[in-house]
Image 1: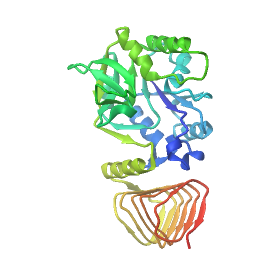
Image 2: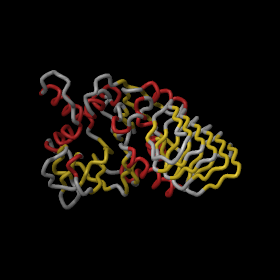
Image 3: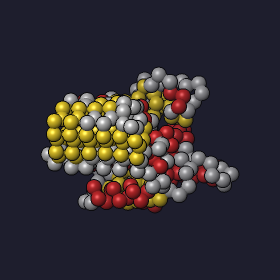
Image 4: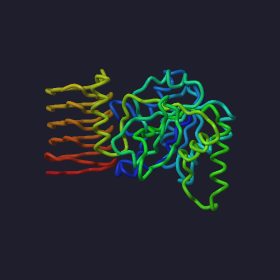
Length: 330
């Protein structure tokens, strides 16, 4: 089975980090968002991937080749930011009417992926939310069959939000529906909506099964990303690389500390992820994500998201700092 992973979004809600780093490569519980998605799919038997890249796409391409050299990965460039449907539409020639799974590049869920992929026909992942007006919504019958799909309804008739996981067996019809939306447009740069195309399939008789996921982790904003990092560290137990130097340091689990870190006279944790080759001295860090090649001196950080190659000196703060930054709080 082929997997399409759209990772072309600019990630504006995670700026300043996404000025220099694609959202899919933001660190989370010792991995990246993209690696969590790919690892889930590989474990379920998926062996062919199509990554649709755009903004900072060269970084995603380099990451995929470096970390997954043995996987069959095709890179497709989305130069026009015309939405998810457009990203999928660009993959038409690569799909060749094969059955596919689509997973959004910022979607991390806990679910039985083998069971999901084994569903006969088409399926999509859903999760009940209190306010579904900001999401695509699936209306279903008592048998969990989808009767209608609508994007960001002002008056929702269902609380089943689409989480960004789709199994499509009738790919020809999906691309036909996407084409009909393109043909019905004005020829400008309107967003091509995948939810609308899938609802077109439903109207033409395609059976979609709504599959409820156990957990849906929001990686789109700083606060929810930190919350997701904390939850996943607790679930996975964290990890400390053997390649490290700790001196007079207290570690409060769960934490994830990558290779090559040097930590001295510090308290780290709980719920902290630290990238490779970072240096931390005379500091306290909790409930935070710290990028690679970062230097922290004499600071107390909590609920902070710190980019890569950053240097911070100073006092207690809550920070949201992008890559390649130097701050002296003294």
